[in-house]
Image (cartoon, rainbow, N blue to C red; front, side, top):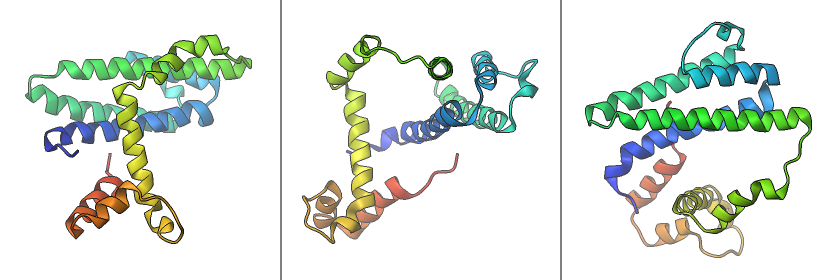
Length: 186
């Protein structure tokens, strides 16, 4: 259900999600382990320090983009008396970078974690936490929008988009599409 009071939070979440996705790509695909060690130290310090000039240019661009997003969020939430939220976001980003670095180290050392090391995560996922349910719903709706036209050409079960298109006005179609398909600048 659309609730306009959460639109700013969704806007922030979208920006941070895009940057986290690119951060994951940096750790998984692009950088060497030595570069990742330095990059993680830079993120953990949350600022420029000696040695940061040794980072590849794209890492510097990522830091600038993330800093810009965080500063923008800080400007807005501080005016509402909730500037403390930004510190939690920074801490979460630092922890995410450290987790990505741990994974990159495993890869470099050819370590394969056991199932036991993932048991806690599996148990949490199997409990259907609210954040997982909500993100799954968003992904499903996005998938329905993208595959809607193709599905009309073959026999299929009705999707959420088809139901919405059938039981709503053209304005609703435009709103659904613009929310899920129109890119947002970061």
